[in-house]
Image (cartoon, rainbow, N blue to C red; front, top):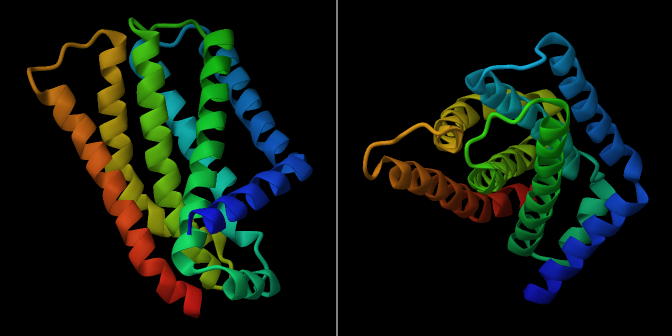
Length: 218
């Protein structure tokens, strides 16, 4: 199982390296958006800075992860069906999208630090929260992309299904990230928010492993 997962993950990474236009296209979108924010708000307040960062990450996630399943044609899916199982395939996709989203989020954060003033009281803590939030976003949209790919590859369906799922998760991440700006939480609140996000991620992974085999057989 691990060998199959590694082979599928290696395939996705090699395809990404060979088809770099999509990666650079998303990176250009991030850089241009942040540059427009700088032109509009030279020194945004901490709350605005935080909200803008996560809104940009949301759109980056939609654009980056939508193609993970939508680029797989029917013939290619039939080939994967003959050489791998559903669980191995979805786990490889989850790992690949986590890696991709972590890279894009850290690059976005670097551009935020470069183009906008840094209002963070604890940058290292915020980087950890960014990694946790990026993993959460990638997990949710990977599952949604798998569902949308089976609905005649309708990318709009992913956004429609994702809205009620991603909003509470995004609110939790934004709330948690405020600790890096110096906001004081009551005792136990910080740990509670972190555990809620981790619990949500575990639930999405379990649902992906359980539900994807039904999509796989379709």
